[in-house]
Image 1 (cartoon, rainbow, N blue to C red):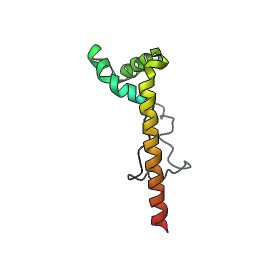
Image 2 (tube, helix red, strand yellow):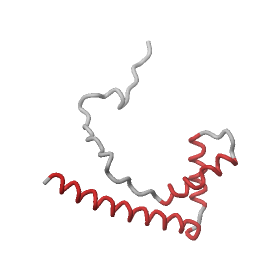
Image 3 (cartoon, rainbow, N blue to C red):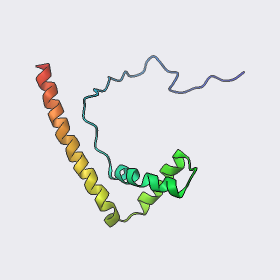
Length: 102
């Protein structure tokens, strides 16, 4: 007789309820690694045809770790700019939310 799968998926009651995320809320800023991965993903797929999704991520991670500080600098700059964009948008969004609730 097969065992029932034990895990979080089956637990319906007693769990913490998540509030719905506002679709109008600003998107979080990307990390330097995500900028790198987005830029390099296609190259990895071209160099390794038929590679699985997980293997792409593993290769991207290895390439990221191999970069020195000078090579990472452009991605760090993009991440800092995107973080600033997010903070500005979040501040404006929160101001609108306070205005609407008044």
